[in-house]
Image (cartoon, rainbow, N blue to C red; front, side, top):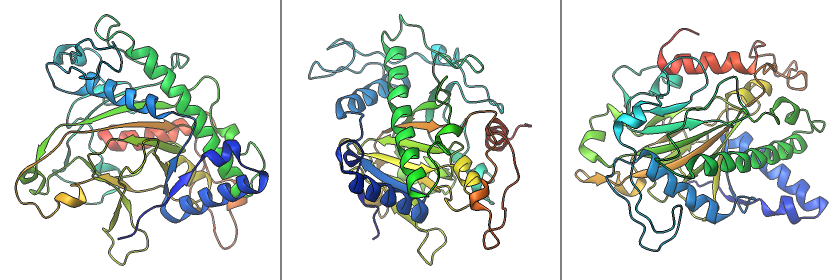
Length: 354
């Protein structure tokens, strides 16, 4: 079974000029081949990643109580109480074509509508919470009260900033690997204010029988909206990316977590548009884990992930850059702004007018 290699990103920070050039070439090749790659040893430490997952459980999980046994994590040994449903419902993500902000209930989002032609009656089995930075005043974030979850907002805004930095570092590598001038991608990505989006995903335990009906999946095959996506996942399994080299159109490659600092990176729609399909967005899904696919009965354990969507500036043209329009590769996409593309995609997701 094919697998995506782990790419050691510490070379970007510590390597020689030649080693950094090799890293940039590797990153570009992997993203061109698969629309996805796996990074380890970025500037985001394992302690931050693990703490992030503890907050995911707190904000999304439908538990009455979560108590750490080792005295670690936020609130240092105190009991974690999940938000009651009525408090989550008070900060809802509105199902419209604007950037997503707040809590989305199980079934609110239907990823099958994005890239699948046959999607009638299909549903996602996850809930999630989306936010941006405090500096994004055009589309303000929604937060639970500080008294309900002390420290949650501050941690998540700090994590978003760390992800933003790594996202820009990946784009810097792509500039070099694609032979672009410095800033040709970075200048299309908003440095200030940060308008990237951070999402906490929580997947409830679900029976294999329910999944085997063919109507439900934790997330159906889809692509994301921004320039790139950074994704942290736990050890539950099920994440897959399309196998573009298989003779089977529905073949996917499992992306198992093998390193504590591992980040999955996907090419997203805006970068696909900018490169005129040279870098195609990575089609990915969350399915039944590979070691459970032959099991007829039973229950999949809960799953958690954290995604950061690195967004282009809202007013910037995300249509094809001139370097990627040639007689051999004619223009595929028309010009439109980053916000216009987002509205088209999220409008399709929710079935609403843009």
